[in-house]
Amino acid sequence: MSEKPEVLLTRAVYAGTIETLEREFTLHKLWAAPDPEKMIAELAPRLRAIAGGAGCNAELLSKFPKLGLVANFGVGYDTIDVEYCAKHGIRATNSPDVLNDEVADTAIGLLLCTARKLLVGDRFVRDGKWLKGPMPLTTTITGKTMGIVGLGRIGEAIAERAIAHKMKVVYHNRSKKDVAYTYYPKLVDMARDVDVLMVIIPGGAETSKLISREVMEALGPDGILINVARGTVVDEEAMVELLKSGKLGAAGLDVFEKEPQVPQGLIELTDTVVLQPHVGSATHYTRTAMGQLMVDNIKAFFAGKPLLTEVPETKGK
Image (tube, rainbow, N blue to C red; front, side, top):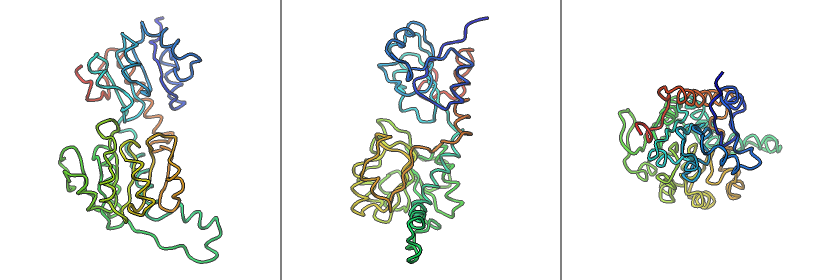
């Protein structure tokens, strides 16, 4: 019986996925190694596949001359140096589609919690304030305009849910798409015209601080910012300042620039900001599906079969 292929897992992922990886491959857990550098040195001459995706910069990838695949656990792959991969014949995969609905639901949940102040209402009841009088009125989302930054697969799932809530949807993308929603080539123009700015774009250098001070000021004192993308795409320092000064109305945030560290300024804004610990796709169902897709990509690689979800940057390389 032949030995199982070796795979290096760079980070802890869903427990069921780790069990599957251990069953299908000879698994090496880099994050749990007493001496990670020793593990890397031992695997360097022969390793062909890395799983997980975290920390897959050029420095790490260059240590494995026979590496052929980096399989990411998640749709966003900004932790993988795909430019290095493309130059060195390394394929990269991610896990799209299986998490679209979960992230879209989280996005709408953040919007409802932010606009209708559902968490404020929860505290209002628990603190006994209702006994002294009614809670102040909140904001409707019905009839309001949502501007989606990044109308990809998840963005389209969010748009469908927004329409179901009787909202108008517009969008900003790198290029116009064949959809019924109005397209804004300039992000700041869209921010000026919408009530809700919904951010669902990839992370990375290209999108760093794309949601700038100018964009948030254009969104304005009645505007709501929802970020289910990456913390790096928002100028976090400017956002905190604008929220505190009232120049930005409210925010619902699932991601942060240096997570799990969250700026104290955001933590203190309990009435206008809703915070979540990067749980957009965090259900057992979706994590299982994400993990299985990652495993299936690795199995396809070792079997010499077409990869299921290779990222565009490495296709044909």
